[in-house]
Image (cartoon, rainbow, N blue to C red; front, side):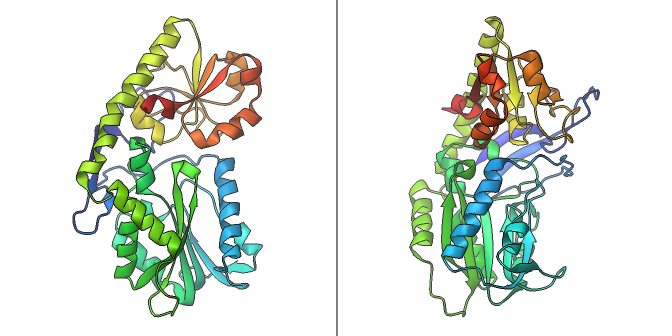
Length: 354
């Protein structure tokens, strides 16, 4: 349903002095006609992404999620928890420890098994989900957080497709996957993070907790409306690739011609394919600012744009800062008021996709 052609590995950031060229690999999203899972069929890249700084929006969403799960009565007052986290960073264990849960032994069973954007990084989806389900104690709960495929399609977030992300879940497909390991979704919570994320609570069949509640049923109905199993419904994603890239390139070229300085912010893996498709180089975008020390001194794969530390915002005094992760807007405006104080503005890169 989505073909981004040959792309550099979006999680490998070469040294700034590495001249390249960077190797490229096919990047395609396929839809399984049997189970309905949107997925990569193969990924020849090797994950090497330097650890980024956890966004405040992600931290806030985790705290909100725990509060909502507690309020709904889905967390035990005590017991063990095992977490399958994302390789991009972030953990809920501190929040859950404050609720009386202790980390389970390595490989041991727990009353709460939590997966926060971790499952999508598993090449063998069936095996990975079976492993998580097997560790849930009788009467326990499996919590799965994922970027909803319906949100990706509705927002035309084509650059959600990345190497290393093997699966893109609709609630419909995930419910079927859970059924294959003897689990059923019971309830769900929705969040604005990434344009639409879901935290799904599932339990073992036979626990006597009934079927999916209204929240899950609403997600399933939304999947049906948007057509998460209909290949033709994905056409908007593919069409938006060239529109997004062309609009971004034209804007950057116009800003440069007018003598205005533009920097990027957020050396995120989602920015890699966009910059490559838009044929943006360091002449159009001299640097991408990032707070992660592990990324500073490296460069964006494919485009060769250097990653710089935030001090450059004050040094270069940009007229505009192109924000590659829209969820960071409130955080960066608060952290770097000098941008707007000097007459600059923050520009959401997603606005060029409409």
